[in-house]
Image (tube, rainbow, N blue to C red; front, side):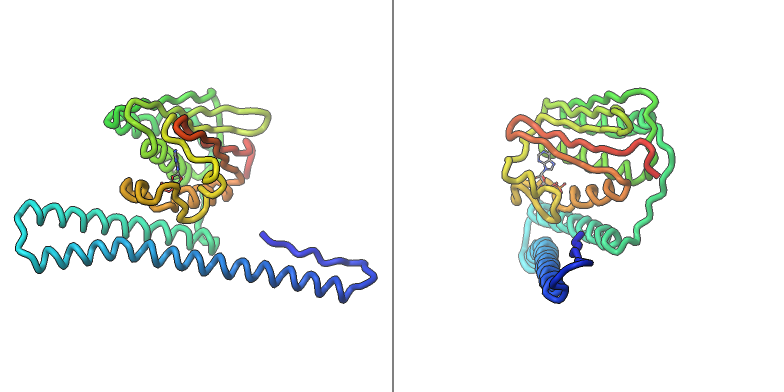
Length: 258
Ligand code: ADP
């Protein structure tokens, strides 16, 4: 969001106008650079799974492999195809967000009921990973939001909390009202995020540990997308983290947002 102040009353109107145009040009240059960096990241991220797919398909086609080897390579091909599909889906989502062509259909959501449903969906997965999931939601919390988008936001945050935590750890979701704002926090006691990475984690394609998150199926787009979704709801998201201690994401919504 760039805004160039145009002076209304000035002694040197032409000089001021020239300064404003120069500022605008700097902003446009910045946007151009950002766009070309984004395009470079997209082509890199798309090329990587394709390289694996082509490479392993060639091996399966040309070499005389044992059944076991063949199975292993075909699994990689399937995994990388899934990854490519996920990337394309997320990029399409971001394009819709950027063009303002995605629709948010708000309804009044009872957060207690909403989180009970999330608990039913997620508890078995946490259990399978030997982790605990706790929910503590103040009664009668109502939020005007798009329920599918809200589900997408929490699925993403819970998935991350699980991905970046060890077995035996606990993820807790807490929701409460303070003045006219609704706060929802998701706290894990996982590996945490180094301080120097914190300012960037909502940036597109940003990953703290590229090779590790790649093996966990991460694309680096999840947080960028959910931040846009939260902003589109008139809310905001913040993060606090300490390495090897854990991470807390806190969402803030206005209670009576339209
Ligand atoms: P990814 O698909 O790689 O998980 P995200 O946009 O969801 O992408 O997250 C960006 C980066 O932020 C991740 O690669 C990871 O390094 C870091 N991150 C996100 N959530 C957590 C968390 N709960 N604990 C530790 N690191 C996290």
